[in-house]
Amino acid sequence: MNLAHWLERTGMAAPERPALFLGEACVADYGTFLARARSVAGWLRAQGVVPGDLVAIFMKNQPDYLVVFYGIWIAGGVVVPINAKLHGREAAFILENASVSFVFASPDLAEALRDAATEVAPVIVPSARYDGILAHVPAPEIVPRAPEDVAWLFYTSGTTGKPKGVMMTFRMLTTMSLCYGHDADAVRPEDATLYAAPMSHGAGIYNMLHMHAGARHVCPASAGFDPDEIFDLAGHFGSVQMFAAPTMVKRLTERAIATGQSGAGLRTIVYAGGPMYNADIIAAVDHFGPIFVQIYGQGECPMGITALSRADVADRSHPRWRQRLQSVGKAQSAVEVAIGDAQGRPLPTGTHGEIMVRGDTVMLGYWQNAEATAKTLVNGWLMTGDMGFMDADGYVTLQDRSKDMIITGGSNVYPREVEEVLLMDPEVSEVSVVGRPHPEWGEEVVAFVVGSAPPARLDALCLEHIARFKRPKDYIPIDALPKNNYGKVLKTDLRARFEST
Image 1 (tube, one colour):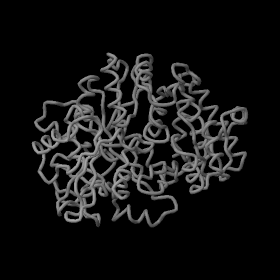
Image 2 (cartoon, rainbow, N blue to C red):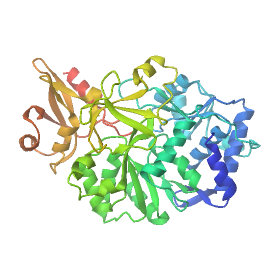
Image 3 (cartoon, rainbow, N blue to C red):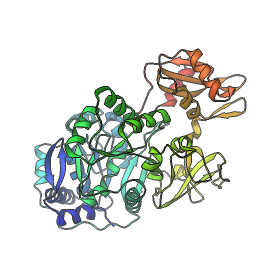
Image 4 (cartoon, rainbow, N blue to C red):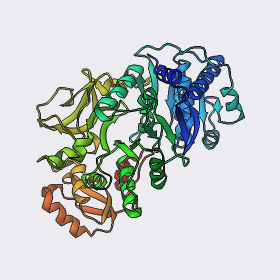
């Protein structure tokens, strides 16, 4: 089923319900939203777009993002969302790799594409021409799409090489949306979803269930993440749900404590996209209360592997609550999750190995990349590349990416375990642990530390909590950790520093 039907049903049943907001201002009700999306679809069809054609969106967070998004689906096209934080050349690579028919771009991002000297697709900028598109004869009906048709072509962040296009089908997105409502948080018409993270990624991919429920869609006027703006909008709208990377949760907590904000109006914050350290989420729950849900997924299985419920995140009564809080929760309703070896064979409970998942939220494959698909989909399982273990109660603890595991003197060291300990020091604000080549041990453990904690104190902290061989052999001060456009720490950049010395 084409998921544009969810917008159509809400637009027909409740056309006067407020839908799209820029800041506190309503710019479209659901009837207007549907009409505009139909006009975009009508224009695309008039330009020769046929079912299966790819149309990109290279826009900052704004209400018209969703208008274009659903217009593409109504026309039968495939949406190719591109992170607005990417460089023009990076965006141009995606446009060329996907062979898109058109790209809708914000004015400054269209300029970035022109600076990259790309001629791979016509660029549509929200301007007089776009206004004409909104006035175009609307598409009379939604183009039918099958469950296995590609709906969304998502490009991975490319932390270890060129990004790959993940083929997300309508079945995947439908299942993921329904799992959100069951495993994470129910969505109601009176709710508002706040897009403070890129709509090309985790924040935007949750729009569908909110569309189905007829909830409000709020884009901050800043088009990005600003804690004070989020607190103001939450207070204005009430019952706000939002997606946030762990670094965003930490910044929200620090700002709220500093300014005395209670977070009134924030109903649910779903966090994902990187490691959430226990110290940070404990501080967040202590300040805001039980409003947090953790999701574990990746582009190849979007938001759809495990979930740690708000009850588990807030629980302090269970004898193993700290271990559960450090986990990523239990398998979501529509998937099987297991720990396996390199051949995709499940391992016994409690054994460390690679996290594997199979089910209806797993990708169809990588766009025009059969070799990478074959390496990632093994014996019916998606090999996530994440290392971890599952306890007897089904809670999965993610330790690190397989490529980030450190092998020193024949022993495995999982960086996250060391990072959790170092972050217990109040003068450490961020830390990243990597392996440095060593002629005798193969690798040695090294910590890049943001903060003023003295190495001797960090050494003592490690010796108190973890085995001696896991203790960093060097503590390297750094002003800020290098991160990609999704806020993930680029350990490849940190390791590259050793190659240049």
